Length: 447
Image (tube, rainbow, N blue to C red; front, side, top):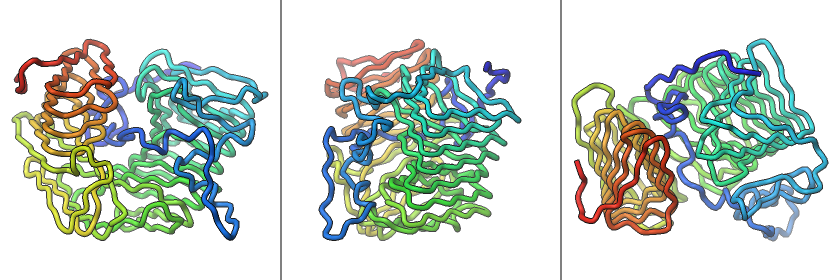
């Protein structure tokens, strides 16, 4: 099936299109960095229990460490840094790319097959009708991060039963559930990071994976989650002032978030709370209280109207300290976009500020996992910090000084530039479509 619609990308906060084909401010909703949960051990280590509890198999240090006993389950392949199907899996292999879609009013079913998603360019798989996946395995074989998203459009329905979906190499996979979509999971296990925008009807039961970002435009959403083996929420509260206390991590718990967004019911029952992130955007003031087990946070900093403003953040966590920093009380205030974060009796583990528009952002002395400049024509400067991934798009510019980069530098699109001085070796450099990474011999942002 060929696409018959042109994707029109809107440059507004937390929309699900991307500025450079698939890149946009929405990517603040993307996974911030690979964590141990994404890299299963080759062998399993179960927690001892005097009373057998079937849930304990999901409590391994690596969240997908329980996979591999059944020939229909995927297995980790260290040589490609991703998952693959087992050699004795007898199911037929089907290859699709970004040209696959499901038109409105139609239903397409994958059943008892291995689906290899092999995109040839940056574009999305779009579902306007109903896509059903049963007893199947999806392996995403992208050639760059977030190259091909599964996008459930308004009126679209995604139903997954007793199936798996994993990336087949090191490149992250993202799925988007747009306003008016319906999602139904029954024993779905996989690593795509997913996001909702607007009003979504969402159900996940029977030990399904739930890795989900709520945009600040969430409204009229109904979400029912029970017995999730792995629950990871990223929460963008709406504009205004909010006080949030997060449930303890690595516990089977109930959680009700129904009072955060308009006309929304979000009820989690007896699910394994793996992570809970809080992210900020313009005109948002959040206080996180009584969360000693730790949380991480993103910060979307943008200005769409001409006229630059200067923003500065200091001490978001501690460079090199992966365990995080406990604060009895601490406030970071950004007048440039009318936002703030206050932490009381809580542990901040890591942060990922992103920016676009008429912003000059400087960050000092922080632990940063995934910084991104979406351009138009923002600049970002980072000093004396730990950085896992730095990325620039659409003419965005980043300067890194005395800040080790542990994973990757990604520069995409003409006039996008990342400069580095005094940064460590060992990172991957991903340059495409005219983007460039430049090592400097002298300190100082070259603008």
